[in-house]
Amino acid sequence: MSQSSNNPSTSGVSRPSPGRKRSEASRIAILAATRELVAEQGYEKLSIGGIAARAGVGKDTIYRWWPSKGMVVADAVMEEAQPFHLAPPPQSGPVDEDIRAWAHALARDFADPVRVGRIRAVTSAASEDPATAEQLYERFTQVQRTGFIDRLRLAAEAGEVRPDADFGAVADAILGSLMYWATAHRADLRVESVDSLLDVLLRGLRADRTDGQ
Image (tube, rainbow, N blue to C red; front, side):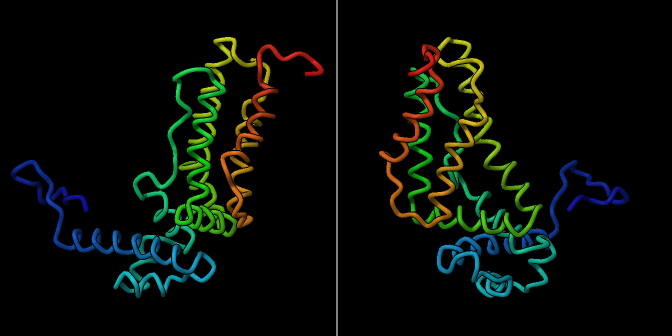
């Protein structure tokens, strides 16, 4: 809470009121309770009343900061430290090796039971609420997609991949496939499955590719 201009601080430092500390503690409790309940019962059974009971706050407190269940879930998942692998592909060697390392890290996230439960939760929330969908895209999908495309552009400048390739389509194919595995409740996501997809995509990106290969 900002300090009133009619009562300037003599020390030059704005001190929060006691109520702000309680509010921040409540906010943290709400987000932690949301993550716990998503892991225990999934998005569909999650309710604002259940979150409030677990966090020890009133439902009005939740609605004061979040207009919908989906927005609470999005903040709870995305505010956690490193909820998903968001680092861009490395620049440590040949582009195909770097892309594989990046995709394998993503696959480990999508295969982890706790993380995949959160991925399903935010995906469900996004399907119900355009604002949540936009937030999810900006904070997760766009970050992943942009980092991947930037890495391929560098590879094109180095002559490793075709500069006329649709890098966005390749990113969408990888991210979309992983999302399918998660949301379809597939339990067979393995590194080998990801590598099979990458074999096809990277072959099409190769700068030395000729028609018929």
